[in-house]
Amino acid sequence: MHIVRESQVITDRVKLPLHFDAKRLLEEYQELQLNNFEYYNVIQLRAPAHIVDPSLPVPPPADDYADGSWTDWSNTSELERSPYLKAIIESFRELTDVTLVRLLRLAPKSEVKAHTDPTLGLEVEKSVIRLTIPIVNNEGVVFYLNEKPVPMQPGECWYLKLTDIHQVVNSGDTERVNLTIDMVPNEKLRALIEESC
Image (cartoon, rainbow, N blue to C red; front, side, top):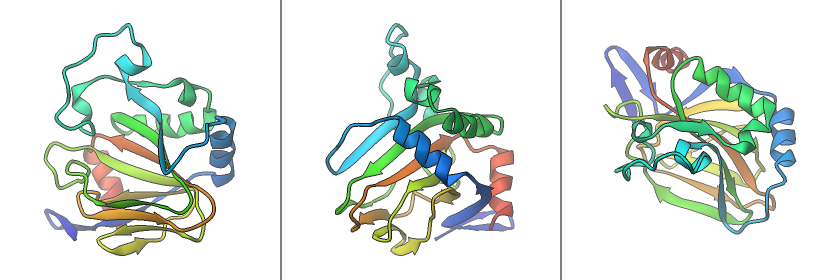
C-alpha cells in the first residue's frame, strides 16, 4: 500500500497542493453540451494525434494504451474550446509530457467495478501517472482505493496509485465527472508528489 523510493514513502493517495476553480471547471464542462449516456462515458481532451487528425499515420497497436510512448498526442476540439481546462493542461505540460486527458463521466446509480491499472503508478518502471481533479460530485459518490474511501472534492488534485485495486460507486441521483490527466513522471513531478505526502 506504499511506494518506497529511497528514503521517501508515498502512500497510495496524495492530495497535491493544487486547487482549481470548481465553478469554472463545471461551467466549461457544461458548455461542452455533451450527449446523454448510459453507465459510463469518456470524453477525450488530449488524444492520440492520428485520432485528432485522421490524415496522420496510424501507429502500431499499443500493448498498453495508458503507456503514452506509443504515439504522439494532440488536443481535441473539446479542449480547444475550453480555455480554463486548456490552461490547466498547459500548466502541467510545463512540468512534464502530458499524454491522455479525459473527462470521465459515471451515471447516477452506477459503479465502476474493482480493478487495477498496471501502468498507472510511480513504482512501475515504464509508466505514466494519472492525476484526478473532480468536477461534479454528490454525496453518493465514493472512490475506493485499497477498499478505503478517498475523500476527493471538486477542484482538488489527487495522485492515486492506480496499480492498486480501486472502484467507484455512484449511488447518488446525479452524474459524477472527473478530469483525469495522464503524464510521464519525471523528477519535478515525483518531487511534487513526495513533498505533498
